[in-house]
Amino acid sequence: THHIHLQYYIIKNDQVFHSIIPILKEKAKEGVEVRVLADGMGGRFLPKKTIRQLRAAGVKVAAFFPPVLGRLQLRINYRNHRKIVVIDGRIGYVGGFNIGKEYISRDPKFGYWRDTHLKIKGSAALGLQIRFALDWNYAAKENLFLRGEYFGEEMEAERLEPEEGTVGIQIISSGPDTKTRTIRDNYLEIFHRAKDHIYIQTPYFVPDDAVLSALKIAAASGVDVRLMIPCKPDHPLVYWATYSYAGELIEAGARCYLYENGFLHAKGVTADGLVSCYGTANMDIRSFELNFEVNAVIYDEEATKDLERAFLNDLPHCREIT
Image (cartoon, rainbow, N blue to C red; front, top):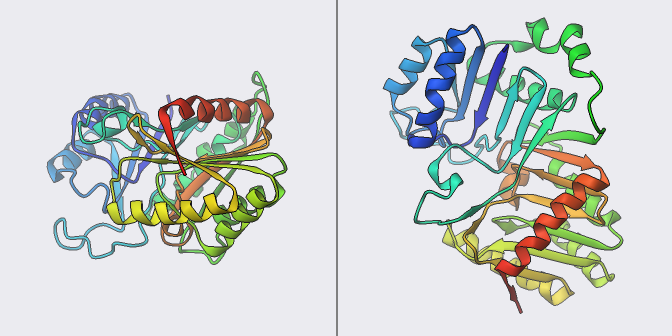
C-alpha cells in the first residue's frame, strides 16, 4: 500500500520477470512507490525497452555498477550479490533466490532448484530497508534517508506492533566498501562457539584459511560438522575447488554430501539447534571479500530447528563423499 523495494543480483528477461512487471506497473498506478535495483552484470540482459516502459509507468529503476559500453561489463569483481525485498517496511525477504526461470525449476539445464529464502515480518525488516536504502542511494542518487515515511517514528510504531512470536534477528552485510568482513567473521564466531553440530549448505565452498581452520578444528574436537554442496557445477573451476576443500574437511573428520536432486543454491549455516545464518553469501572468498552480500542471523531455537530439519530432509537426496 505504500512502497515496494526490489533488489536482485540477477533479473532475467524471461517469464518470471514478465509476470511481475504488470503487478509493479499496477501498483505504481495506485500510488505505491516502486523501486527496482539490479546489479549491472546480473541485470545486463534486461532490454532498454522494458526499463523505459517501467519508468514510464512510474516504476523507478537503477543499476549497481552498470555496464559502460552497451552490455560490456569490464568490472567482473565487486558485484552486488544481494537479494532484498521490502514491502511497506513491515515485510522483508532475503536469501538465495534471484528473478529467473531456473530459480523456480523451469530451466532444463539445472532441473529442480533447491534454495532457501527467508520471509521476515516486523522490526527486523528495518535492517533490510536500511541495507536497500544504502545501495539505492549510491546507485540512483536518491537519498531515501531523507524520507521520514520510511524510517520515521510513525512507521516504527506501526512496525513494532505486537505479533505472534518474537524471534531475535540481526541483519548483517559486508562488501569491498568496508575493511570489516562482517559475514565471514560471523561464521567464524558460530563455528568457534559450536559444541554439538554445524550444518552448512552452500553452492560454492572456497573458504579462506581462518574459516577452513575453524571447521577443521571443530570437526577434530568432536563437533558433528556436515557440509552439503551441489553435484551439478554451474562454474566448473569453482566446482573442483569446492571438491578440494571438501577433501580437507573430510580428512579432519567432517562429513560432506553431494546434493543429487537438482541444483543446490541454498546459502546458510546452523549450529547446535540454537543459531542460524542464511542469506546471499556463499561460503567462499568471493562472498567474503569481493561481493556485496547480506545475511540474516537468527537467534531462535524453533526457527533454527526448522532450518535444520530442512537440511536433514535433504540428506536422503545426497551421496556422501568419502
